[in-house]
Image 1 (cartoon, rainbow, N blue to C red):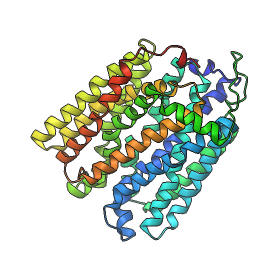
Image 2: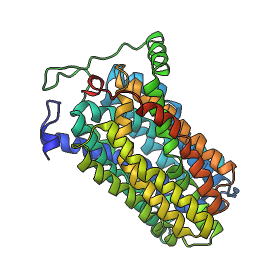
Image 3: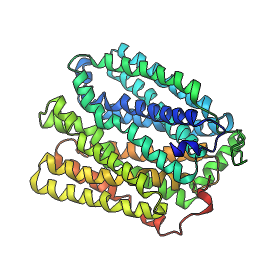
Length: 418
């Protein structure tokens, strides 16, 4: 509770608490819109008379939707505030989910997945900066980690819950339920989300609305493209996430289609991986007060790349699912420490408006993830456990270069203070 009482905004601890929980719930829903449906994708393509190749395509459409309009959402939130933009994102997500049960073709389904994915852009570009602007650095990183654990209930329990619900309900009913939950979150945000732009904070500082014109937007994006630290962090965030997102997209093919596992077994095999991610976030909550952020990133790389090397070596030798999952679990633990820390460092690598910075960060990282996941599918990573282990390890291995360039630079000081 102490983090909420130290909010920089002139709001009560109760409102700060509900604000944070609602941000986490909205993020959770944007992931639920993917994860709870993944076990149903084989039913979706069968119901819509589509080939199984559309299983990863639907996930990539969702990810690309998250990228498509971040360039515009960020500057709009810098100009008009975080609150109205996030409310728009919540409305868009809820409506798209409520329409999905009515579709009769796979292409319209993928278009709606793209529209639902746009809400992911609002999470990245609006809610993350709003949280960072509301709390001091240590509290912001700690809250990002703790709230990520709530959001991670989706990939942890979503596949299992989706598998269980599919025993009773159709995939169309699942989307309808997610849409109704989106309406409830929208109502909560309306009542509890404060504004961070144009508000005088407790320390007397004030984030002024940024001018909105094409020239200033392009100038900000040009500055970011020339900011080496920002670019390195953005690409590293995307590349290092490829094994995890690739697993989410290809696991139905690997486990259910190729290995013949039931939907329940598919869900159970997700538990250790996303449990490792949650454990990493809990470890970050303890470590963030004891280490500088750059030191935390260096520390996280040991389990990340150690886990991937273990996964690659043992899967090549045994070709057993447990070897792959154990390696991914170790990797996920490192990701739990790395993700919020690297995001914070990258977001504050520039003094531009944080909505614009978060937009460019999100576009680069999510596009990298989407292209990487698509590459995994094209290269046949969904055909066997060995193919996945090789392709996923190569994808994440590409992050070593931007991470090395980022971490060899002197640690930032003044730039990370809110």
